[in-house]
Length: 153
Image (cartoon, rainbow, N blue to C red; front, side, top):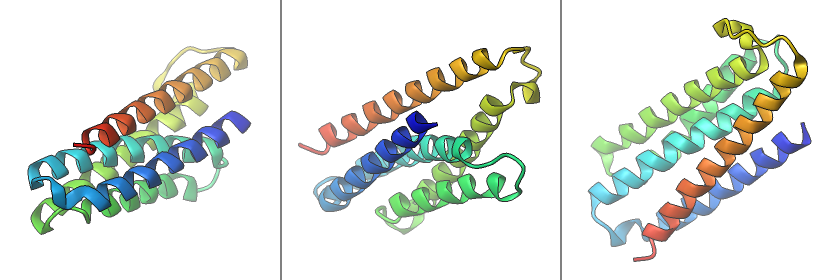
């Protein structure tokens, strides 16, 4: 559980750093480039944060299904607000889709029987949970690195 909390904090830190960088340098680049950057960061960031948030919340509450999606909406809205008006819905859309996908993956990681995955032992479930969460953290960090690298120019 401590690993998931640390990965969640790492993910939030990456999001804040990238938001600051993109917001500061968005006027230096054309709108298509900024739109692509915001789409990429909104989708992977909302996916990763919704996944970690879903894994950290208790299972038997209705709010656990709504909070990760709302977090994805917020992330998509923030990054979508960096784009001009008609394209700003694109960031919101990618945030919602990433939030829903992260919530679904988190629910399946907690309970593989939802998708009829035959995992019998708790150690196998925990092993898959940690492997996938570390992979998502690596993927999120890689995308954030590429975005910061592309904004240097």
